Length: 328
View 1 (cartoon, rainbow, N blue to C red):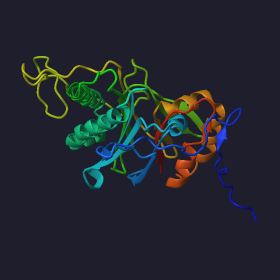
View 2 (view 1 turned 135 degrees about the vertical axis):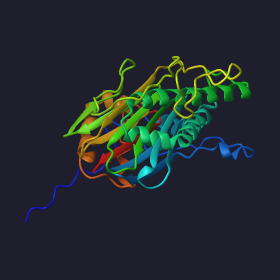
View 3 (view 1 turned 45 degrees about the vertical axis):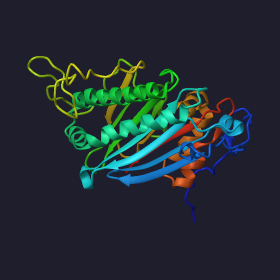
View 4 (view 1 turned 90 degrees about the horizontal axis):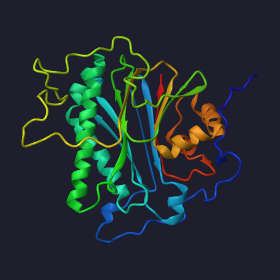
């Protein structure tokens, strides 16, 4: 009797040799007894299943931070807004500036600000995704991102911190709960990776700055995004921007805004990640080959996804944050 083919067992590392640091945490970050809310767990793991997709998400402290007793600079937030088929799932991840004391706080704030903005606009966002209004989605999410990162700069000013140091990259996925809608929306600012595993091959689909949507989406069009007088409309309020001469629009982020909306196919695996995983995926073919064998089939459980996500590669020791979506 033929036995079913099983995926390869988890491994500790791939590449030319073992990484420099130990595989497990060795030191905890220093704690302030009066600031215990500032502590960051070594690892965060989450998952869900909505509509046609299964989500797995993880954020893991890098080998170098584990060795030095530094906090994880990456932050991960997953949230569902709304109920039933009208619900919208957000995955947000951010990375704080390197070698700055408040990097983990800046990353967490960036995720929280964008989650508040998306949550308050989730009904309109879900409608725009379902109706394939690409132009409205891109302009509206761009503005929500600008506002959120503007809040982060304002927070830096309130703390008396250099905004260049109290800063973070930000990458987000929007997943509609409607099982009949397979549109997946990515947006963000800063470095990282967006990959798709299809038919056993990885494709780097990170949108270039000049890209509009990436892969064409059938039926994508937009309602007018301007008033007859030429004023841009905000997504969440539908009023000309800026809202008043005393409340100017926030300064745009220095890094360019990235956006991609595309239709997933059954069997696809979509992966969004911070630079800590994107860089070894682009630089070590053996890691791509390994994850192809692990993630080409049914979605793994949380523990298996965690093990796969932290397979190490020598020379890459940063935090890793990843969200993968398996299409039924």
